[in-house]
Length: 421
Image (cartoon, rainbow, N blue to C red; front, side, top):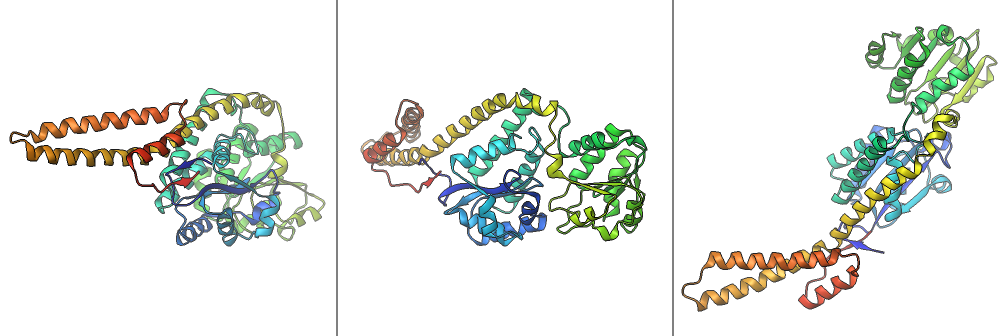
């Protein structure tokens, strides 16, 4: 395993679970709201971890960070969610070092999204990195890696068509409505919850359905009013939820609660009601299906919708992977430079000691010794020597490890503190 001077800890890990093996129920157990994320970061700092990024979306919960053993990160996750270690082990993945780096590239570039090409995750990654940095939990390596992933994501967006079309969870919900509901422009639609998915769904509803009977409800009314004002929609108080549901033909639930906000006991309906639950954890109790007039669809079902757009996107995967490989190679080149940078610095200090000793000798010997000129010449020579060694170590045809050992041996350099990656 290659070694780099980037961390006091031993290994870089990506641990987590996603839609691939964990259903919505399990993902809900490991979901983290903003307060839980902050508690997790605080605990990580107390535990002496130096760099950590936490992501929690409807499709995945992940931790990227340095630890001596992945269990340290798994325990952090379980301590701050309802999930258990046993539950995690059944559905989780653990990536280490270069595999963890590659995983972050694929996640951030939309290749690992539940709907291919959905780039919403990259904004989560940016925000999470910013929060970690504010709490002193983002080292130089992780920050550089996140920036590289952002660069790859931008290039894939602009240089490929993998995100063409309006396919996302929010668009898939509108697609489902189109495929399963007749006379959409005249249906009463109620959107409960105006977080990010709720806002995106609202925008897609207005854009594609031409429906003028859309009502918004949010626990915090002013948040709903901000969204409604943008689209000229109706807003009702949270206290009117039951009444508004009874008037609705379609109920879209996109709240961020940790417990169901809708169950059969509040549904006083006399006509068919389609409920789309876009929340993780699930915010609609499955007992609503006990009612004959109710049809319940969860986002896991919506995400399985495939159409020509998704099929077309798949043809662009090789181009996206080529971009990732290129940006990842640049990142690895930086890592290689980081690998020998401590030795080059130590060499420079050693040569500076030689120069200082020799200058002191000449200073005593020569009465007309030119201090400034001598220092300028010696500094230039030191820089040229160290640059020569650095270029040698960057050469692809050179065994970097063997060269580093030889340089250390010849110049009797002190062993440097280095870390596995």
